[in-house]
Image 1 (cartoon, one colour):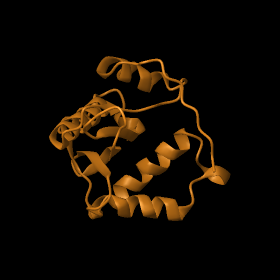
Image 2 (cartoon, helix red, strand yellow):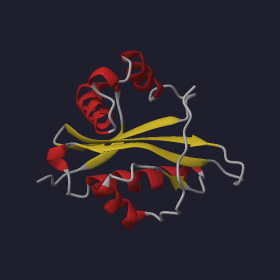
Image 3 (spheres, helix red, strand yellow):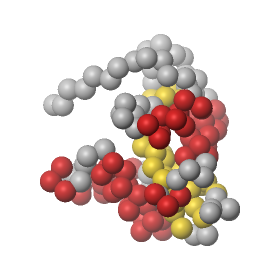
Image 4 (cartoon, one colour):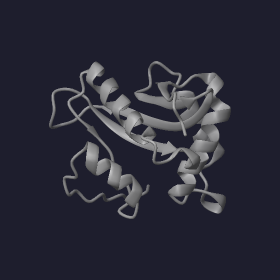
Length: 153
């Protein structure tokens, strides 16, 4: 049981704790083995967290110096809003830490960061089959019925 969960911005010294969660997140979405992200993508993603000119941010959930969760989010303009919106892109908790409210705390921390930045909305997507995630998402946000289309270039 995790009792002293803290949510904070990621630091360079967190790489060893972040990387297994990042790999687990990618595996959950079918990006492992032959379909794994190229290492250069992972390294570029990591570096973006520390570049103040980048709109990408990362927070981690920590318990007794162990990284047990991550969230990545991106601020961007919208054609339907005056203020930036926030896309919660990646959310993942260690398997041993699930069901203890860590995902909710990470989402709420993104809500707080978005409010401070002046964003008018936080949104995200997940697979229809992610039942555990969707059970949480239904409690903290509203599903608006959109369907995602994607075309790889």
